[in-house]
Amino acid sequence: MVIISKENTQSIAELKSLTYTLIENINNLNIKIEQVIELEKRVKIIEDTLEQGKGAVIFAKVFWKILGWGIITICGAIFWHVFGKG
Image (cartoon, rainbow, N blue to C red; front, side):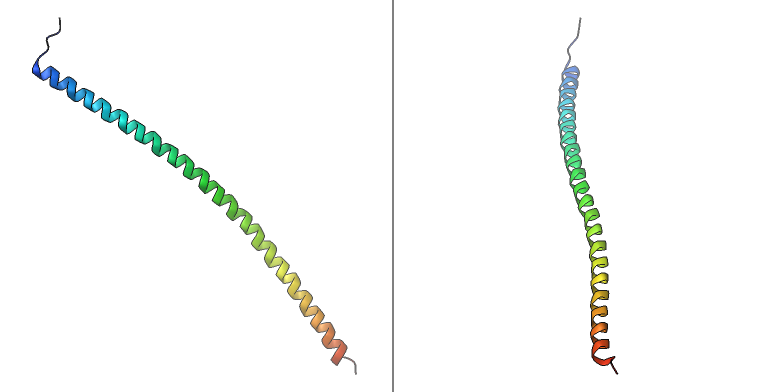
């Protein structure tokens, strides 16, 4: 036999309220976890893009060095052709 008193009724109401608050907090936490997972995916995409960008920068540096040396060589050849003949 359960004796229901005013204190028991208040305790049950507080327990229900705390239970609903706990459920709401768990749902909010799940949403935040999903947001973190989504952000991790975006960060991975950005990291991959930056990694590809590094390769492009290295290619550009090498390309411009080759092009620069080519121009210097051509200019030197023209200079030698014009002024080098004695």
